[in-house]
Image (tube, rainbow, N blue to C red; front, side, top):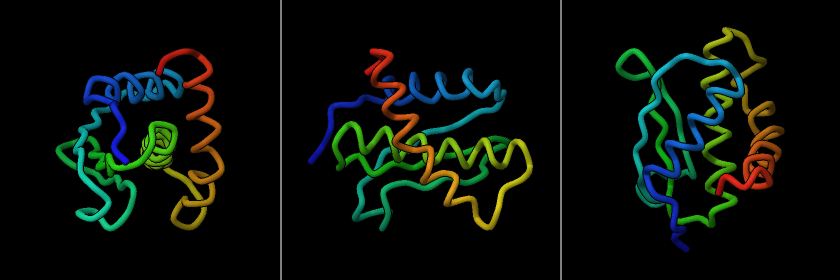
Amino acid sequence: MMNKMTRGDIRKAIDWYLAKKNIDTNIGIRRSSYTDLDCWGQCYEANGGYMIELAMNQNTRDLLATLFHECVHVWQWERGHWKGEGEQEAIRLQYKLADEYWKAGLV
């Protein structure tokens, strides 16, 4: 199932998150598929900032949750601390952030 989120929609969501957390960094976007990534999303350091790769073949709410999951990892790196690999915190926050963004009428 492909959603209709454009690169601009994804950029808007990232900018919302960065402003919310008062983070000043660059985040690039790569749109892909689950088959290519073997996961729904991933984030890594790249070019003095970060790169988020997203599998676009998921519904809009799940895509937003995946995006915000990866944004939480950026926040973890930027603040310099997290437990383990940071997955529990990202999992705990991903749908909360997606729903907050949705309820604000930004989708």
